[in-house]
Image 1 (spheres, rainbow, N blue to C red):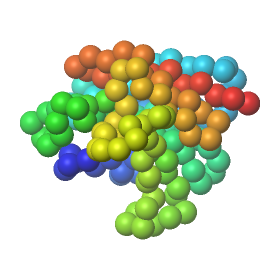
Image 2 (image 1 turned 60 degrees about the vertical axis):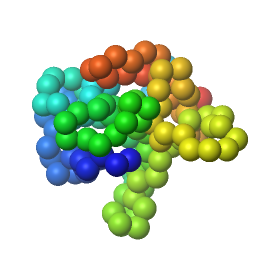
Image 3 (image 1 turned 90 degrees about the horizontal axis):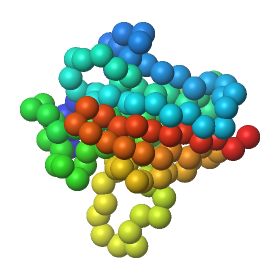
Image 4 (image 1 turned 90 degrees about the vertical axis):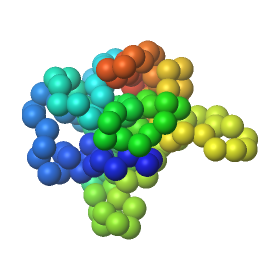
Length: 145
């Protein structure tokens, strides 16, 4: 992304979030979870980061990216930015890797964010964007045990 702001993961490590701005799914007891992830940029209430713990060193992170005066993203780049974090890899060597939507176009450029109607699968988790508005996205996380 051309957005010149920190990722939610970086903000979390720097302790920039309030406790109620981060949600963590570490030991799922249900097959599906639905929640709203609020736009990362404004300093407003809401969940800014969802972390899905895969093991002691790896997580999936979801954050909502929207156009703002501080970002340089285009309208087609708005949505949920999903990425895999491996804490054993140094920051500049690929700690975070984008999780792209399922069934991307055969050719051409497509955004790294997930928009309404998109799904992405990573390991045992499926991320589906149910709805979107100017304040964030409604996301359903499904897990296969």
